[in-house]
Every structure is written in C-alpha cells, then in structure tokens.
Amino acid sequence: MVPIHWDDSKGEILWLDNSKIPWKEVSVSSKNLARLIKAIQALEIRGAPILGEAGAYGTAMIANNSPDSRERILKNVMEHGARLAAARPTAVNLSWGVRQIQNVVKKEYDSGAAPAEIKKAAIEAAKKIQRENIEATYRIGEHGKRLIHDGDVLVTICNAGTLACDGLGTSTAPMRAAYADGIKFRVLATYTAPLYQGARLTAWELHKDGIPVQVITDNMAGHLMREEKATAVWAGADRILGNFTKESGSVYNKIGTFGLAMMARELHMKMYVAAPTSTIDPEHAVKDIKIEQRRPEEVETLLNGTTIVPEGVGVLNPAFDRTPPEYVSAIITELGIAAAPYDASIPQLLELPGSMVRFSTK
Image 1 (cartoon, rainbow, N blue to C red):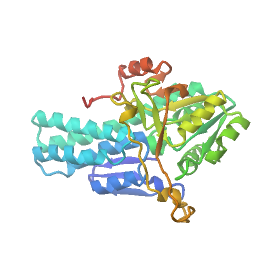
Image 2: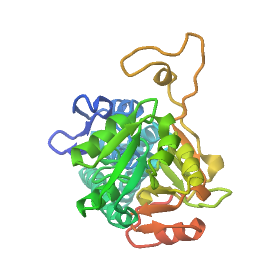
Image 3: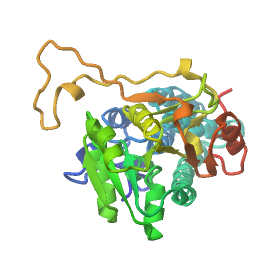
Image 4: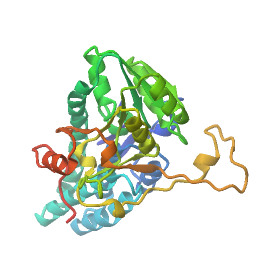
C-alpha cells in the first residue's frame, strides 16, 4: 500500500484516496495545485506525516511547474507554497513539509543553481522526506512495541496507520511490530465520527494485517474500556507543542482524543501518543493554535447521504481537540520515548541526531 508518491515520468503526485476506503482503492494523480489542496481539504489525503509528504511534494510540484526562471521558481514556491500550507491549519506537518522545500529552493537559488537544478533539488528533497517518514515509523514501532504485552486490550482513535503516516503508521507501528514478534493482544477501534476513520480505515488496515480488531462506537468507549479491561489508549498526533508544560503544552489530535485520555486516566490506563519528531512544534503555544472547524454537512449527513439533523438545527464540527500533558503517559517518537517531565524530555529528543525538526521559521 503506497499512500502517496511522486511520478517522475509525468511530474505529478499520485495518492490513494482515503475517502473511498474501505469500499474501493482508488488512486488519483494530478500536477495541479488547486486539485491537491482540494484533496487535502476533502480528506482524500490526510494524517499528519502524510500531510508533511503532501506539503513537500506539492511544493516540489510548484517548483517543477514553474517557468525555467530562477526568480519565478522562488517566487512561486514562496507564494503558492503558503496557499498549500494553509489548506489545513491545525496539523503542523503540512506547513512543515512546505517549509522544508521552500528552504531547499531558497538555498539552491542563493547558490546560483540553474532552474533545472533547483527543480531537481526540490523533488529529491521531497523524496528524502518521504523516506525519512517511512524509516521513522519503523523506529517508532521498535521503541513502542515494548509497551505492548500479551493479553493487552488496546483502544485506538481515528487512523494513524499507513494511510495517514506511510510505512507502519505511528500509533499502529508498535502494534504491527509487537504482532510480528508474536505478542498476543487485541484492538478496539473507535468509530471516530463523523467520518468514521477508525471504522473505515484503522479496522481495514489492522484486519488486512491479521491483527485482532473490533470496532466500537465512540460512545461505547468508557463502558468497554472498563468492562473489557483495556490496558492502553494509543493515539497519533497532528501537532505536539514542544514547550510541553501544563500551562502551554498539549497534544492536538483527532476530536475525541481528549475524551479517551480522560477516561484512561480515570480507569488507571495508559495513554500513549505516537508521532515522528516532525509533528513536534517547538515554536508555538496553545494560544497560537487554531482548531480547524469543518463543514456542518459532515455532521448533518450520514456517509450514504441521509440527513439526520432536523432542518434549522445548528451543529459544531471541530476536527481536533487538545489533550494536556498530565493526561499523556508517554510520547513515542522515532528517536525514543519521552516521558514526564516533558519540558525536559522533548527538547532532549529534538537535540538528538536524526530529529526531523529542522529549518526553524525563526
């Protein structure tokens, strides 16, 4: 399963349309920036690390589509890259991926590289980001698998698997690594309304792997976490504030994550967050983060098109929520596991060789 990649022969991006799974696997290709932005906003392309790859490939595509003028390439990458970065405001990886390629283009421009060389460097840098993302998922799996034991019952939210993160996924990577080692456990995958990414995507992925998984509705979680003696919640992340203190730190992830974290704390369960260091944002605080509000139609209408909310009744549809650090047992990254106090452990991780945090905006 290849969720996104660059086609050298056509100079375009190909992606697996997440909105069609599990009914069918449909690949889409385009070299049009507006089409890519539409795909991101419609959740054809989704998940923090994959958005990072889409941001990188999209910015490389902008460069590749530009006239053979050094000045025009730089101008287009900076201006149109900003449009791409703004497609989804809460997840940090999209703007991170855009920024990586903008920096590469600027560096090549400053060095006097020819237009063809600038374009090639942008594409190769985007491919490198994807390779690093994939490698990171395997390392997350190796670090996190030791937190999974025989007999465990694990609860998941949304989809932080291959479709969202490439490779082994993030929250699914330790599961896949543990399963490969013969550890016996099972997974309760929450629906994750209103678009059911847990039921449609995570259950689909784990079932294909042979990992025992059952789907539960979101409002069953507390009851079944207690009755099924669940041992841990595993979540991905769309942004982790690097200054991870009680006053200013948080994990931003799919709406419903905070509720699961509160239930896990009440039931004395672990709450694990798995993400690459590219998802860590060391430059912003809670007050800076905008929670994306999605279309009311997603709540008003079932996936089959049936409207379930009475006409004239308003809805709220935030895409993400914020989980404070005191609810998080550990954060598993490609560099290792961070634990409290996070304001010390996270900066230590970001200083290690191999951290994907680079090219500061400051």
